Amino acid sequence: MLKKIGLFLASIAPGVFLIGYNIGTGSITTMASAGAEYGMALMWPLLLSCVFTYYLIVSFGEYTMLTGDTILFSYKKHYGKAVALFVLVALLISEWISSMGLMGIVTQVVQEWSRPLTKSGNGFNPIIMALIFGSILYYIFWQGRHRFFEKILTFFVTIMGLSFILTMFMVDPDPASIFHGLVPKIVGGKNSFLIMSGMVGTTMGGILFVVRSILVQEKGWTIKDLKIEKRDAKISAILMFVLSVAIMISAAGTMYVRGLRVDNAIDMVNLIEPLAGRFATSIFVVGIVSAGLSSLLPIVLLAPWLFADYNGKPRNMKSTNSRLLVLFGLLLGLVVPIFGGRPVLVMIVSQALTILATPVILFYLLRLLNSKNIMGDYKISLAKNIIISIILGFTLLMSYAGIVGIIDLF
Image (cartoon, rainbow, N blue to C red; front, side, top):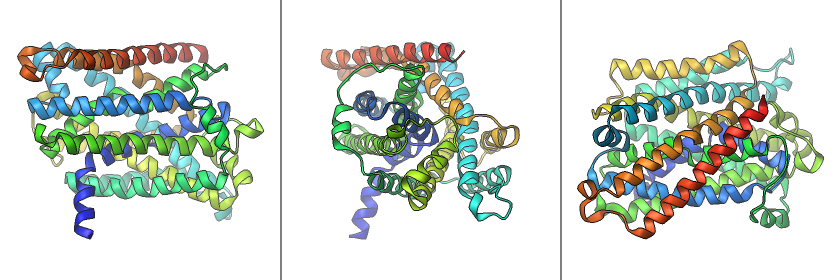
């Protein structure tokens, strides 16, 4: 039995990796902000983006299984350095900004939660906590084994998932509001466009699909493994939706009903605790920390992965360049603890910016899939062209919403 469970977990490891990357503190802050400000009214774009994410995860995986090439390398190979460099730079900037926001949120939340545990009432020092978390992640990275990363992420994702689902049930959600949230509608509000774009950005940002291509190549999957790849993608998309909804419900059931908002990371602790209790808040904090670490690990791994992908070289996590790039990403996590700032706003804007690169990534995927020279007999059908074109249109709409939302901030 244990052997079968182990084989099953190994078969869905790429999906678990995507969940670990996807459901981080960026997702938490965005979903919590949506739930606190609009209740469950924005659940429909979340569901739509998860459905689209499933289809795209499968499509990007299929391409790599058929050609053996990863996406970023293919862009460079078939469309030149300019296109590949644009995607590479856009993704790196987005991820490094996320690294700053992620560690800032985790350390602020831990500090606020720990205030009753310290004599001074100041809580655990954010800089010290950032150094501790960063050191743990760098130690994990130093092991240099992909399977070890997968096992660690599986642990973090499991703790995170159980924490958020338990919090959701403690809040006792209203079923009617959940069903109403599935009905598409445009909500008013100063930050509605920005939050909506951030929700879609964190669920179906372009980096997710570039990483998917790398993971499929890492697993050595071929077109014969399509059934396994689809199952893996389905589990990943479903869990993304369930965990995101759990966070939204936790905020909607506590903060929205009392007209409270999430403006800072500590709001998620200060506002939930008197409404749901210390125990529920502690579980939620464990979920936030697990989500932050489960996202930070793949984020800091992305830089060496993306450079190797761009150059078409093997991913050597023990090389000096890889270790320096990962160290740089982790050091960025000290920015907010040292200099201060509002990491929640940083994360929402970061997620909104992520969606801006997604249409470019999808446009060139569509060109690759329609190339007879590249795909041969596997050139995609008219139906798939229509589906991906609809998804591309949706990402363009969300990109516009993100631009409008960012402009509204100023």
